[in-house]
Amino acid sequence: MIEGRLVGGRYLLLDTLERRGFGPSHRAEDRITGRTVVVTEITLPADDGARERLLAEVRAAGRLRHPGVVGVLDLITDRVADGGMREYLVTEHPETRPLSRVLTDGDPPSPRRAAVIGRDVLAALRAVHAEGRTHGGLDPDCVLLAPDGRGLVTDIGLARAIGRRATGGSPFTPPERTGPDGDTPAADLWSLGAVLHHAAGRQAAPGSPLDQAITGLTAAEPAGRIGPDHAEALLERAARPRPTGGDLGRNRWILLLAAGVLLVAVVGMVLWAVL
Amino acid sequence: MVPPVRAIAAANVNGVRAASVKGMLDWLAATDADVICLQEVRARPDEVPVALRELLDAHGWHLRMAPSETAKGRNGVAVLSRAEPEAVRIGFGDPASDLDGRYLEVDLPGGLTVASLYLPKGVAGTDRQDAKDAFCKTFADHLRTAFDRCAVTGREMVVAGDWNIAPTERDLRNWRNNQRNSGFLPYEREWFAALLAHGWSDVVRDLHPDTDGPYTWWTYRGRAFDNDVGWRIDHVLTTPGVAAAATGAVVQRAASHDARWSDHAPVLVRLGGAG
Image (cartoon, rainbow over all chains, first blue to last red; front, side):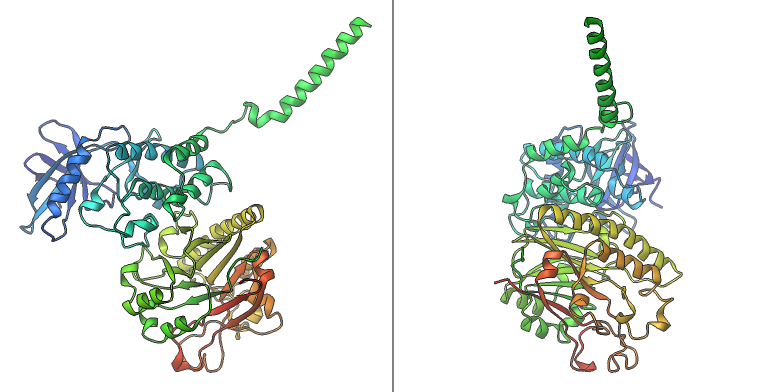
């Protein structure tokens, strides 16, 4: 049992989280601030530059401030039970569930809900891209869903840092990511399209804004993909609540009929009065 | 519209690493198919044998793979195409099955979408059959939507692979003894028939309407292959434009038991009118 351990002399591990992530993740208490955080145990590859890569990614991610990005707080090296050393990444702990778990539990989001998630993830990715960085490994495990419906993004740069380089074949790995120049914002957007396809692609009506967004984001050639502005507009449209009972949309024909009857009645009364 | 493809093949390779040393490479080098849908690949992209990689490179094939993310070394589908795909989609937007390595869809130049399918095997009266039935239910929705979408957009589509269903009594030798076995259950046949009723064409059956078989799978046990006691469970379903262009279909049965490189035989459909 790892729970109850104090990592880095500061973070008390409380329980294990349900994310697969990049290693075992734990809810933990920061003994200094009293905040609840997430501590993820990361096993680095054997190469000499691995820790420097991880540090560089953590520093870059730590500078990001965006409501859709899970904040990175700390990186600690500590000893594990077998005597070896491990890296522990400390991040914020928003009340969320990973999209991967939501889908595994057989509770896929509706197309509109998926569009809301997609819109939030896109906004977070754009913030990452604006800093000259990329996520580099977006998949349903990196997309976290808050109780209020917001989507958040985590694990920015981690896939790159720990050398989990794509070999292709993952549903969320864009075709170009296996190549040397494949780590681009467009590649992140392809992954977003693939995540949306996985989460709600079957439910998206052909030709609907969500369907167009998925198709446009996941074209094989980066040049053939829609850009973030276009994707945002499509997801915004797809995320709009549909008119429900009582709104004009659902009862349009009844309302038009009633208006027509009323108009005829008024005209009839006017004519009757005049004549 | 006739898609710019001369021939499409489907082959359950029963493990690409084993098949590559048994004779699959010779078949691949000799085939005149432009698109090949592979099933039971059972390998990740970095596990594809070097000899196969070299052959694909030498013949200008593009390989797109969907290995199983949920059961390593099992399932796995792939599409080989002479033309580079314009888009690749793993799964059909169904969180319950997308990561199982059962469905991969590519858009090819010229308005043709090709999908490689490995429909789950079942065992009547068990959880495996329940899983197969659940897959079929959602997959039928996808196929109906995809067909209707093609009718609107003018694209053509082919879904080729191991369907694990023999649609009629003509499609397995011992049909009387198998009426309670998965793959020939009455409701499975009705499910397949409903796809045809919706408009999908079983082109091999269309081109061989009055023959038993041609079978595509024979158990390795006993003398099933020598006595041609087989099942026709590998199918090429198409939209009407492709069906109208189909000029021939053949099951490329091995010359002898020893010459087999899989327990299935490739199915090849030739299309006329293309360059």
